[in-house]
Length: 97
Image (cartoon, rainbow, N blue to C red):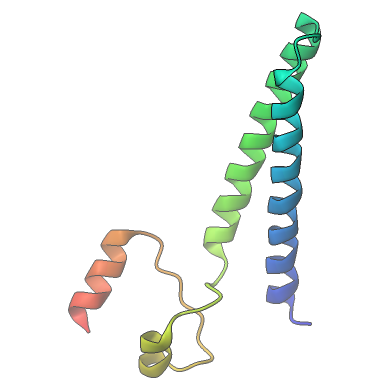
């Protein structure tokens, strides 16, 4: 397996696990028998989880895109991975071509 595929698979798994943890935190927050300490701990954990998800998203943006689409594959070749990060760059690219 290629290194890029391993990283993409790991990122996908981390996102899945973090979403499961986020759902569990929401369920726990709905319970009314929590002490103030437990509520504070859940809030802190939720914030840390969101920070981690943001960092993972930033790292994922640095990875090459998985699918470029038919048009880019025809123009650039099927073995080139391209990732245009924002809408302005995508628009500029489309107007040049």
